[in-house]
Length: 303
Image (cartoon, rainbow, N blue to C red; front, side):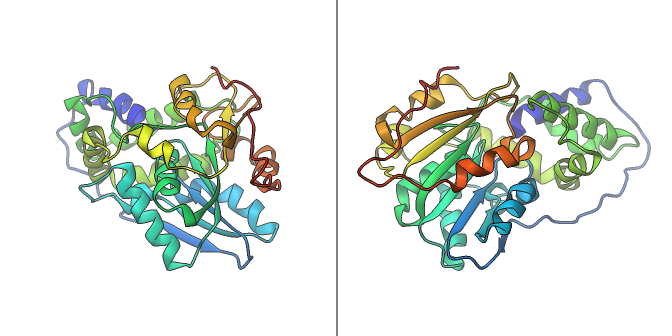
């Protein structure tokens, strides 16, 4: 999700220039890990590339109100300056955060690229995972992607020119809207939640984007999926939207067989936890089926 947004705002580098003094920027650093609640059952919310732990605030509140303990983890913030930004490396960092709080057998809710982290967590640290819920994402082969345009390197400079920060912010928000099935959730406050941390740390974010584009996994996706034994629900945003998950992401989960359940949320796009948290909640807190029954496909998952 972050990569397409960064690629689009990079176009600003081709059309904007200024010779005035650079503007100062705030350096408020968002947290990478937040633990709340004291319930006996724990949900671990793993973020994607954008939104950070604040992006799960609505879902966090709903879970806390029902007596759950909630651990929110942003593996991208944890890895912001790391050379190894593979899913496998991020899963190790998530495992360490869970170990710090003594979390075992948690229900893992992962959004977008966070699903790639969750899948490696379930494969390599099965004792941490009771079940997985993948939000508008499936089995991703790697954290990398298409080669990024060199013009992306100019984005940090653009944000320092008068008016440049606003231009980049507007392009970012436009990308969030195009990836949503409904846009009411993108209030001015939520727009700030998503854009301000990125803009405040744009140099490091862009540098990480290039590392992500070059990242490689130590194991193939087939090997990783073969080691997953946790019930897995893929929750698809059914409304047309950018950053849409691909059919291959579902097909790669086929070896899990009856462990996989696929469901769709109508009129929802790439952000189910933001666009429809009250519709998402019942799916997450429903009793898990016994091991002998496990989960079955609700539909064929084709898009």
